Image 1 (cartoon, helix red, strand yellow):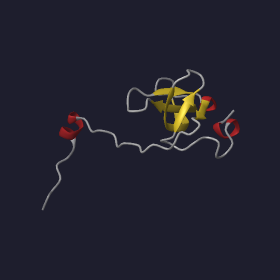
Image 2 (tube, helix red, strand yellow):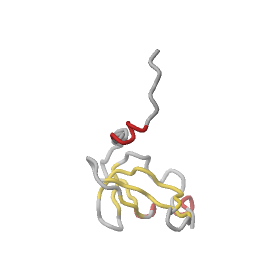
Image 3 (cartoon, rainbow, N blue to C red):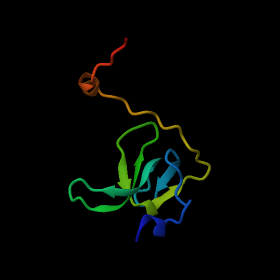
Image 4 (cartoon, rainbow, N blue to C red):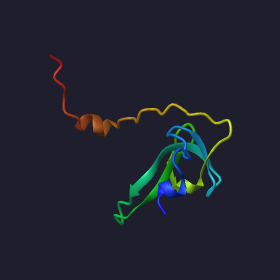
Length: 96
């Protein structure tokens, strides 16, 4: 079953929405839902990634388990922080 078959168009909220993971009972912010390739097995499958409100470690669940929290709104997604290692590895910009 594909993501579209399991969740007809428009049934999954957009990224940034407060949702409940019915499999774990946890509430979090939907970061992504769709086709995902497992880096260990190279298999593709439907997945949803959520993170705790206020930040923290993301977790993966089935898109079918994602439910919008009643009264929950779409939260602004903060840009990812760049680690100091990534900053050192970035090419220098020419400021002229």
